[in-house]
Amino acid sequence: MDIKEIQNLIKFVAKSGANEVKLEMGDVKITIKTGPTRHEANYMQQPSQIQVPIQAQPEVKVATTVAEPVTEAAEKADDDSKFIVIKSPIIGTLYRKPSPDKPVFCKVGDTIEAGDTVCIIEAMKLFNEVESEVSGKIVKVLVEDSSPVEFDQPLFLIDPS
Image: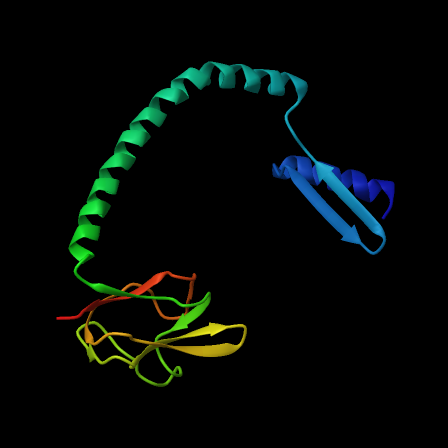
């Protein structure tokens, strides 16, 4: 790549409005960074200093709006306290079906017995069956098929009555 091509590339990047472009061709590596001029940088710093006190006010409003959903979540937790939770015994990927062409192990409204398989969790290419420790009715499925799960993450809500 010669100087004329590099100059044309710099002009093209400046016109495009990109902030940074990296180019690798064999052993040649070129990084072109564009940014505001000194005048623009000074102009941009002044408004940001003025805006700092203005931005402090909305943060207080955000804190008050976050407090409301927390109380709603606490009320929902009280409603779910009568149910038994089946939790993930390991970290991995949860599958609700034994294979893609088979039906799900269980769905909302199904009655299960202790020892029934409710899902499979894949961890490091090993498929581990998750069995219910209680008998009851599936009230809620908390995790979607083929989604990652953490250790002790709630998977299903069971109504033991």
